[in-house]
Image 1 (cartoon, rainbow, N blue to C red):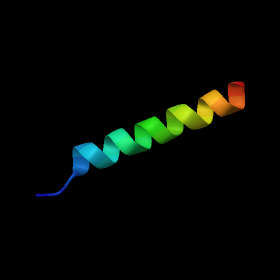
Image 2 (image 1 turned 30 degrees about the vertical axis):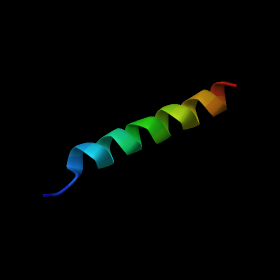
Image 3 (image 1 turned 180 degrees about the vertical axis):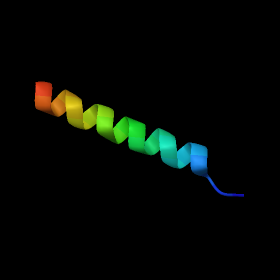
Image 4 (image 1 turned 30 degrees about the horizontal axis):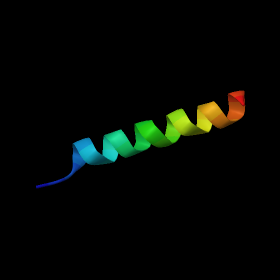
Length: 24
């Protein structure tokens, strides 16, 4: 069983956090 959903969620959270940091 490949944790594709978990990986996708992790990437989404990371990108969202990165955007938040850029926005300040």
